[in-house]
Image 1 (cartoon, rainbow, N blue to C red):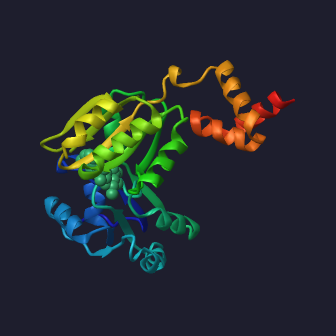
Image 2 (cartoon, rainbow, N blue to C red):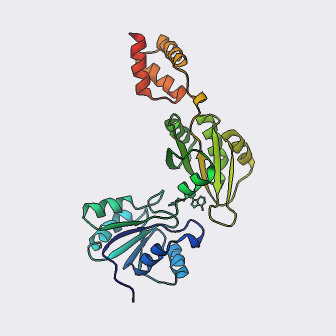
Image 3 (cartoon, rainbow, N blue to C red):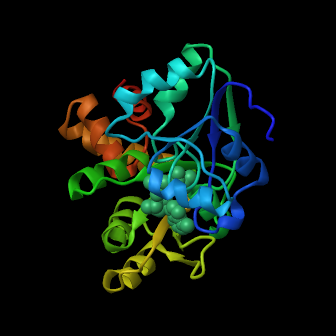
Length: 277
Ligand code: SAM
């Protein structure tokens, strides 16, 4: 007989491909949970079969979460409920954060069981700086929204991590090359699975390669931080601002230079005020 689990919410990371990556602790909690809230119960049923157990499950996904969440929270005081997504760490481009928020507000016991996450696994493969990184999930599909999302992070001095799919990869890499400059990047595919690979190179080289090749499987793109050369020197920046100030009011000039350089609009506004004075 298994010992009874303390009531509460157990956030359980599951494998992103290789079932051997399920931790013994995760398997133990899944086997003992009173209920498993699963993104897709068919996917989780396979995982449970792998560990030789069957547990009651309830679907918890983007389409039913608002309806199901209050019922789950109400049960957390007396039952151990495990939250899993189809693969990897719940809440990382997957549902769950509102459940944790509401469970916390209700004073429930909350425990996390850390484990696989494609974003972090890709970062470890890429050979790009790891001291600062920003996870951005999936880029928007539409060209303009995607370019805007990329422009928004262009000045951030950190490695950037995106989730992608094969059919979108070529266009996404081309948009990243044009919005971020020709930085180093990596395309990590099928991590922990049979055909795992990590292709590295400049964004333009990667964009060329994947312009015609549509890779199969699951993909993470990692982009290195901007190099020093990508940062305009102060004198160049002042020249850009002065030129814009000749034509435009201060706020508009700052906005234009921010768009051109990826630098912070408020910092540029302050500098433009100084130049005007
Ligand atoms: N919660 C998951 C995690 O912790 O990584 C991510 C879920 S998100 C809906 C699924 C995306 O993660 C895929 O489209 C792909 O971009 C990435 N991904 C998941 N498994 C992967 C793998 N084995 N190799 C590469 N990318 C993977």
